[in-house]
Length: 425
Length: 164
Image (cartoon, rainbow over all chains, first blue to last red):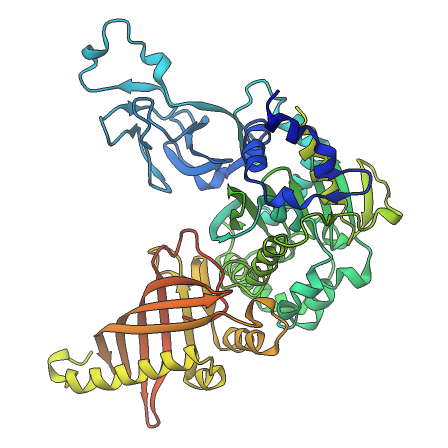
């Protein structure tokens, strides 16, 4: 047995499940990071794309599964493929365009050409490989790829359970509820903010299920809201929300329960801040029931659904994490809107997204600052534990798993439980 | 549009350069109240992403009208935003000025912007193309439009606690 195996066999020291304590080295140890990339990111379903990002036959986008660069593409029959962006000859990437449309991928080095399904179609001067060269064995390395309600996931683990089973019925229900912010139209990606933060990926994994930080870190954002919206975001004082473990590392943080189902109570009056938008949509000829549905959808859902290990459905956008190294993580905040919906509604969604998200948002820079401060703080006191035990005191069994107060760290415990399960294999 | 040949471009270039340098110095010194005063009420401060120019219908880094500018400055100044209390310090240079157009009382000027930020003793460098629309008034120039397109604007960036 190697020393490394011994070291990581002590998973209880890294995450003490009973007391909900995380060891400092969880954010700091490069060997542990390498192990996580193998045991977690190569052994589960990892989010790679939303279907609207590559809508047509031949359209593609670049993505990542853990550290591995991949291409997600739709072939001529509309089937979605995900494959490693690496020529089978001498490893050059076959595509460096972030998003686009093509009929094939050709390696720039020696011209090996691949089809949209990753199969090797042709190579220059093949005779030098001899008669027994088998093109079928030299296609791009493929990942198993499945989608649920527009969200595309891929995995290196060929024998993993189907995506829908991995997500489970509770997660699928919340995904369906989240997608109601299409307002009756299909959900469409409108763009994405990207920023890199010097932090371990798990700091980010924790954050989307952390309501406790919101009134502190985002006070300066709250101060720029109108009274009614500020009241709505005051979910900690109102305390009617909850956090629940949904299994397999996933969790739900229900901040604004009245916005769990955007189709409920649609006869409620339109909030003042949306009146101007409603008038604009009415003027375009939409009937009143549709106006109400669209306007309600513009504000987003009332919850964060956090999927292990790399994507969160966060109120009105998708948040994706990509681990880069033990102390660096790339973050994407993907703006979504209504495909075919009124321009005014999508414009408002874009402005709301810019207001909070991204490098210049009123929220994200403060998030990024505290995440970095966590990474800087863990340089000291390496024997001190990181506490994720908040809310254990009155946690109760929920419909799917443990359910705690809105500010409870139940979602982090769900993620670390899954982390431990995967790392112990 | 006034024909460019009829404008005394050398004198105009000196005037707009002086104004834009003064604005840049204000931003480095974080004299934000004075900066807000430079603007026309219906001016837009935009940092786009990628090559697109349909700013209203695309996702930008920021798309600030007068209210958003005031809110942004208020956020910087009130001390509740951890990323801007303290903010990164910046030093910028603006150069390669070119008058792109002069129409009525509006002058469009392009230039290059290089900015170095420092926080936690870590320095980062940013570069972008800036496009200013200046309005000629009795009291001198006013900012009517400012579009700063960073290199890699639609790629991986870091968060900003200051203005470009």
